[in-house]
Length: 328
Image 1 (tube, helix red, strand yellow):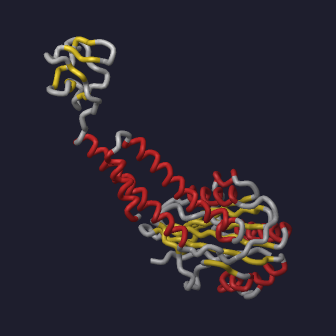
Image 2 (cartoon, one colour):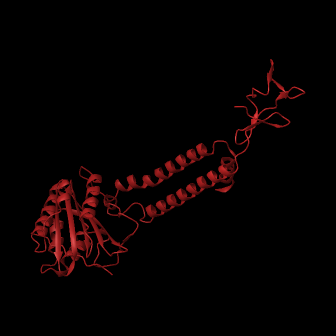
Image 3 (cartoon, helix red, strand yellow):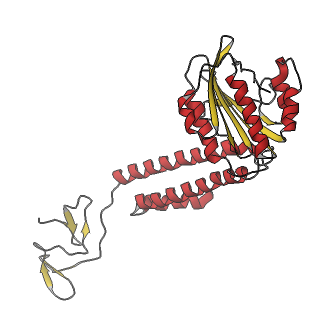
Protein backbone atom coordinates (compact mmCIF):
# COMPACT_ATOMS: atom_id res chain seq x y z
CA UNK A 1 0.00 0.00 0.00
CA UNK A 2 1.08 3.56 -0.62
CA UNK A 3 -0.29 6.52 1.26
CA UNK A 4 -0.97 9.83 -0.48
CA UNK A 5 -1.79 12.49 2.07
CA UNK A 6 -3.81 15.39 0.63
CA UNK A 7 -2.01 18.68 0.11
CA UNK A 8 -3.07 21.59 2.28
CA UNK A 9 -4.81 24.70 1.00
CA UNK A 10 -3.96 28.01 2.64
CA UNK A 11 -6.75 29.79 4.49
CA UNK A 12 -6.98 33.42 3.84
CA UNK A 13 4.18 42.55 45.95
CA UNK A 14 3.03 44.35 48.56
CA UNK A 15 5.20 46.58 50.85
CA UNK A 16 8.29 44.30 51.02
CA UNK A 17 8.88 44.77 47.30
CA UNK A 18 8.52 48.53 47.64
CA UNK A 19 10.83 48.73 50.62
CA UNK A 20 13.38 46.53 48.92
CA UNK A 21 13.34 48.86 45.93
CA UNK A 22 13.87 51.89 48.17
CA UNK A 23 16.79 50.22 49.89
CA UNK A 24 18.35 49.53 46.51
CA UNK A 25 17.97 53.18 45.55
CA UNK A 26 19.50 54.30 48.82
CA UNK A 27 22.27 51.73 49.06
CA UNK A 28 25.89 52.15 48.10
CA UNK A 29 25.96 48.99 45.93
CA UNK A 30 22.99 49.60 43.66
CA UNK A 31 24.23 47.69 40.64
CA UNK A 32 25.42 44.74 42.72
CA UNK A 33 22.05 44.53 44.48
CA UNK A 34 20.18 44.75 41.18
CA UNK A 35 22.40 42.07 39.73
CA UNK A 36 21.53 39.74 42.58
CA UNK A 37 17.81 40.41 42.17
CA UNK A 38 17.96 39.89 38.40
CA UNK A 39 19.77 36.58 38.84
CA UNK A 40 17.30 35.34 41.45
CA UNK A 41 14.23 36.37 39.46
CA UNK A 42 15.51 35.01 36.14
CA UNK A 43 16.53 31.74 37.81
CA UNK A 44 13.08 31.42 39.33
CA UNK A 45 11.35 32.16 36.02
CA UNK A 46 13.54 29.63 34.22
CA UNK A 47 12.72 26.99 36.81
CA UNK A 48 8.98 27.64 36.69
CA UNK A 49 8.70 27.75 32.90
CA UNK A 50 11.11 24.89 32.35
CA UNK A 51 9.30 22.72 34.87
CA UNK A 52 6.29 22.44 32.56
CA UNK A 53 8.33 20.95 29.71
CA UNK A 54 9.77 17.83 31.40
CA UNK A 55 6.38 17.04 32.88
CA UNK A 56 4.75 17.13 29.44
CA UNK A 57 7.57 15.25 27.77
CA UNK A 58 7.16 12.36 30.19
CA UNK A 59 3.41 11.99 29.80
CA UNK A 60 1.91 13.08 26.47
CA UNK A 61 2.55 13.14 22.74
CA UNK A 62 1.89 16.85 22.22
CA UNK A 63 5.13 17.77 23.98
CA UNK A 64 7.14 15.83 21.37
CA UNK A 65 6.19 18.36 18.69
CA UNK A 66 8.35 21.46 18.31
CA UNK A 67 6.94 24.85 19.25
CA UNK A 68 6.17 27.39 16.56
CA UNK A 69 9.25 29.38 15.45
CA UNK A 70 7.81 32.71 16.62
CA UNK A 71 4.86 34.60 18.09
CA UNK A 72 3.72 35.57 14.60
CA UNK A 73 2.54 32.00 13.97
CA UNK A 74 -1.10 31.40 14.98
CA UNK A 75 -2.15 27.88 15.97
CA UNK A 76 -5.25 26.57 14.22
CA UNK A 77 -8.42 25.64 16.04
CA UNK A 78 -9.67 22.07 16.30
CA UNK A 79 -13.04 22.80 14.69
CA UNK A 80 -11.71 23.00 11.13
CA UNK A 81 -12.34 19.66 9.35
CA UNK A 82 -9.42 20.32 7.00
CA UNK A 83 -6.92 20.49 9.89
CA UNK A 84 -5.47 17.84 12.17
CA UNK A 85 -5.22 19.79 15.43
CA UNK A 86 -4.94 17.92 18.72
CA UNK A 87 -5.18 14.18 19.39
CA UNK A 88 -6.32 11.88 16.60
CA UNK A 89 -7.25 8.21 16.26
CA UNK A 90 -6.83 5.75 13.42
CA UNK A 91 -10.39 6.47 12.34
CA UNK A 92 -10.24 10.26 12.54
CA UNK A 93 -6.96 10.33 10.63
CA UNK A 94 -8.30 7.86 8.08
CA UNK A 95 -11.35 10.04 7.52
CA UNK A 96 -9.07 13.06 7.02
CA UNK A 97 -6.82 11.31 4.48
CA UNK A 98 -9.47 9.33 2.62
CA UNK A 99 -11.87 12.22 1.94
CA UNK A 100 -11.03 12.12 -1.74
CA UNK A 101 -9.96 8.47 -1.87
CA UNK A 102 -11.63 5.80 -3.96
CA UNK A 103 -11.15 3.34 -1.08
CA UNK A 104 -12.46 5.07 2.07
CA UNK A 105 -11.52 3.36 5.31
CA UNK A 106 -8.34 1.79 3.95
CA UNK A 107 -6.01 4.11 5.90
CA UNK A 108 -7.85 3.37 9.13
CA UNK A 109 -7.51 -0.38 8.58
CA UNK A 110 -3.80 -0.10 7.80
CA UNK A 111 -3.09 1.95 10.92
CA UNK A 112 -5.02 -0.47 13.10
CA UNK A 113 -3.18 -3.39 11.55
CA UNK A 114 0.18 -1.79 12.37
CA UNK A 115 -0.79 -1.31 16.03
CA UNK A 116 -1.35 2.43 15.92
CA UNK A 117 -2.51 3.61 19.37
CA UNK A 118 -2.73 7.38 19.04
CA UNK A 119 -1.35 10.52 17.47
CA UNK A 120 -1.18 14.24 17.92
CA UNK A 121 -1.14 17.07 15.38
CA UNK A 122 -0.51 20.80 15.37
CA UNK A 123 -0.88 23.35 12.61
CA UNK A 124 0.13 27.01 12.54
CA UNK A 125 -0.51 29.80 10.06
CA UNK A 126 1.83 32.78 9.70
CA UNK A 127 -0.04 36.00 10.42
CA UNK A 128 1.67 37.97 7.67
CA UNK A 129 2.10 35.59 4.76
CA UNK A 130 -0.49 32.87 5.54
CA UNK A 131 2.28 30.27 5.22
CA UNK A 132 1.55 26.98 6.97
CA UNK A 133 3.54 24.82 9.39
CA UNK A 134 2.17 21.32 10.07
CA UNK A 135 3.55 18.79 12.59
CA UNK A 136 2.27 15.33 13.50
CA UNK A 137 3.45 12.37 15.54
CA UNK A 138 2.14 8.79 15.20
CA UNK A 139 2.61 6.30 18.06
CA UNK A 140 2.55 2.51 17.61
CA UNK A 141 2.68 -0.48 19.92
CA UNK A 142 6.07 -1.46 18.55
CA UNK A 143 8.87 -0.19 16.36
CA UNK A 144 7.96 -2.70 13.65
CA UNK A 145 4.51 -1.14 13.30
CA UNK A 146 6.03 2.33 13.16
CA UNK A 147 8.53 1.15 10.53
CA UNK A 148 5.76 -0.25 8.35
CA UNK A 149 3.82 3.02 8.52
CA UNK A 150 6.97 5.05 7.79
CA UNK A 151 7.70 2.92 4.72
CA UNK A 152 4.12 3.38 3.49
CA UNK A 153 4.14 7.17 3.68
CA UNK A 154 7.65 7.28 2.22
CA UNK A 155 6.70 5.21 -0.84
CA UNK A 156 3.46 7.16 -1.20
CA UNK A 157 5.25 10.51 -1.14
CA UNK A 158 8.01 9.41 -3.48
CA UNK A 159 5.46 8.16 -6.02
CA UNK A 160 3.59 11.47 -6.10
CA UNK A 161 3.63 13.08 -9.54
CA UNK A 162 4.07 16.44 -7.76
CA UNK A 163 7.33 15.27 -6.14
CA UNK A 164 10.14 17.51 -7.41
CA UNK A 165 13.00 16.05 -5.36
CA UNK A 166 14.44 16.10 -1.87
CA UNK A 167 15.68 18.73 0.58
CA UNK A 168 19.47 18.22 0.82
CA UNK A 169 19.79 19.49 4.40
CA UNK A 170 17.24 16.93 5.64
CA UNK A 171 19.68 14.08 4.99
CA UNK A 172 21.37 14.99 8.32
CA UNK A 173 18.36 13.60 10.19
CA UNK A 174 18.71 9.80 10.65
CA UNK A 175 15.97 7.48 9.35
CA UNK A 176 14.26 10.28 7.46
CA UNK A 177 13.13 11.21 3.98
CA UNK A 178 12.24 14.55 2.47
CA UNK A 179 10.30 15.83 -0.50
CA UNK A 180 9.43 19.03 -2.33
CA UNK A 181 5.88 18.83 -3.65
CA UNK A 182 4.46 21.21 -6.22
CA UNK A 183 0.90 21.22 -7.51
CA UNK A 184 -0.71 24.05 -9.51
CA UNK A 185 -3.79 23.87 -7.27
CA UNK A 186 -1.94 24.03 -3.95
CA UNK A 187 0.93 25.88 -2.29
CA UNK A 188 4.43 24.49 -2.63
CA UNK A 189 5.23 22.03 0.15
CA UNK A 190 8.51 21.06 1.86
CA UNK A 191 8.16 17.81 3.76
CA UNK A 192 10.41 15.95 6.24
CA UNK A 193 9.34 12.64 7.82
CA UNK A 194 11.40 10.48 10.16
CA UNK A 195 11.21 7.31 12.25
CA UNK A 196 12.48 7.04 15.81
CA UNK A 197 11.72 4.02 18.02
CA UNK A 198 7.94 3.37 17.88
CA UNK A 199 7.17 6.90 16.69
CA UNK A 200 6.77 8.43 13.23
CA UNK A 201 7.01 12.20 12.81
CA UNK A 202 5.70 14.30 9.92
CA UNK A 203 6.69 17.93 9.39
CA UNK A 204 5.73 20.01 6.38
CA UNK A 205 5.67 23.69 5.49
CA UNK A 206 3.51 25.22 2.77
CA UNK A 207 3.79 28.56 0.98
CA UNK A 208 2.80 30.29 -2.23
CA UNK A 209 5.64 32.80 -2.05
CA UNK A 210 8.41 31.86 0.41
CA UNK A 211 11.05 29.14 0.50
CA UNK A 212 10.34 27.24 3.75
CA UNK A 213 12.71 24.33 3.25
CA UNK A 214 15.02 25.35 6.10
CA UNK A 215 12.08 25.81 8.47
CA UNK A 216 10.81 22.29 7.76
CA UNK A 217 14.27 20.85 8.40
CA UNK A 218 14.91 22.84 11.58
CA UNK A 219 11.54 21.88 13.10
CA UNK A 220 12.09 18.21 12.25
CA UNK A 221 15.62 18.33 13.67
CA UNK A 222 14.32 19.72 16.98
CA UNK A 223 11.78 16.93 17.20
CA UNK A 224 14.33 14.26 16.37
CA UNK A 225 16.71 15.56 19.04
CA UNK A 226 14.00 15.54 21.72
CA UNK A 227 12.24 12.29 20.76
CA UNK A 228 12.69 9.25 23.05
CA UNK A 229 15.25 6.68 21.95
CA UNK A 230 13.33 3.70 23.34
CA UNK A 231 9.75 2.47 23.02
CA UNK A 232 7.24 4.71 24.79
CA UNK A 233 3.49 4.69 25.30
CA UNK A 234 2.45 8.27 25.91
CA UNK A 235 -0.98 9.77 26.41
CA UNK A 236 -2.59 11.64 23.55
CA UNK A 237 -4.11 14.13 26.01
CA UNK A 238 -1.90 17.03 27.11
CA UNK A 239 -1.37 16.92 30.88
CA UNK A 240 -0.83 20.69 31.04
CA UNK A 241 -3.48 23.04 29.56
CA UNK A 242 -2.38 24.61 26.30
CA UNK A 243 -2.70 28.13 27.69
CA UNK A 244 -0.22 27.59 30.53
CA UNK A 245 3.03 27.93 28.56
CA UNK A 246 2.04 31.14 26.68
CA UNK A 247 0.87 32.70 29.95
CA UNK A 248 4.13 31.79 31.70
CA UNK A 249 6.17 33.30 28.88
CA UNK A 250 4.01 36.42 29.04
CA UNK A 251 4.57 36.78 32.78
CA UNK A 252 8.31 36.25 32.31
CA UNK A 253 8.42 38.93 29.61
CA UNK A 254 6.49 41.42 31.76
CA UNK A 255 8.77 40.87 34.76
CA UNK A 256 11.86 41.18 32.60
CA UNK A 257 10.61 44.53 31.23
CA UNK A 258 9.90 45.68 34.79
CA UNK A 259 13.41 44.78 35.93
CA UNK A 260 14.99 46.53 32.96
CA UNK A 261 12.98 49.63 33.84
CA UNK A 262 14.08 49.37 37.47
CA UNK A 263 17.74 49.21 36.43
CA UNK A 264 17.25 52.28 34.23
CA UNK A 265 15.66 54.25 37.10
CA UNK A 266 18.45 53.32 39.51
CA UNK A 267 21.15 54.34 37.03
CA UNK A 268 19.48 57.70 36.39
CA UNK A 269 19.02 58.39 40.12
CA UNK A 270 22.57 57.39 40.93
CA UNK A 271 23.95 59.73 38.27
CA UNK A 272 21.84 62.72 39.30
CA UNK A 273 22.23 62.34 43.04
CA UNK A 274 25.74 61.30 44.01
CA UNK A 275 26.08 61.95 47.76
CA UNK A 276 29.23 63.19 49.44
CA UNK A 277 31.31 60.47 51.02
CA UNK A 278 30.66 60.70 54.78
CA UNK A 279 33.44 60.47 57.36
CA UNK A 280 33.97 60.36 61.13
CA UNK A 281 34.54 63.60 63.13
CA UNK A 282 38.09 64.96 62.96
CA UNK A 283 39.91 66.64 65.87
CA UNK A 284 41.60 69.79 64.56
CA UNK A 285 44.00 72.14 66.33
CA UNK A 286 42.52 75.54 67.39
CA UNK A 287 44.15 77.28 64.45
CA UNK A 288 43.07 74.54 62.00
CA UNK A 289 46.61 73.82 60.86
CA UNK A 290 46.87 70.31 62.29
CA UNK A 291 44.67 67.27 62.91
CA UNK A 292 45.03 64.58 65.63
CA UNK A 293 45.08 60.83 64.84
CA UNK A 294 45.03 59.73 68.47
CA UNK A 295 48.80 59.45 68.68
CA UNK A 296 50.26 62.55 67.07
CA UNK A 297 49.47 65.77 65.16
CA UNK A 298 49.57 65.92 61.35
CA UNK A 299 49.98 68.94 59.07
CA UNK A 300 46.55 69.56 57.48
CA UNK A 301 48.18 71.34 54.54
CA UNK A 302 50.01 68.23 53.36
CA UNK A 303 48.10 65.28 54.82
CA UNK A 304 44.42 64.42 54.64
CA UNK A 305 42.80 62.41 57.45
CA UNK A 306 41.89 58.94 56.12
CA UNK A 307 38.39 59.21 57.62
CA UNK A 308 37.68 62.69 56.24
CA UNK A 309 34.42 63.36 54.41
CA UNK A 310 35.01 63.95 50.71
CA UNK A 311 33.02 66.04 48.24
CA UNK A 312 31.24 64.12 45.42
CA UNK A 313 33.95 65.11 42.94
CA UNK A 314 36.75 64.19 45.38
CA UNK A 315 38.37 67.64 45.09
CA UNK A 316 37.65 68.80 48.69
CA UNK A 317 37.61 67.33 52.22
CA UNK A 318 35.69 68.51 55.32
CA UNK A 319 37.61 69.40 58.50
CA UNK A 320 34.49 69.89 60.62
CA UNK A 321 34.27 73.63 59.97
CA UNK A 322 35.10 74.22 56.30
CA UNK A 323 35.94 72.50 53.05
CA UNK A 324 39.63 72.18 52.18
CA UNK A 325 41.02 71.53 48.73
CA UNK A 326 42.81 68.24 48.31
CA UNK A 327 46.52 68.84 47.74
CA UNK A 328 47.74 66.72 44.84
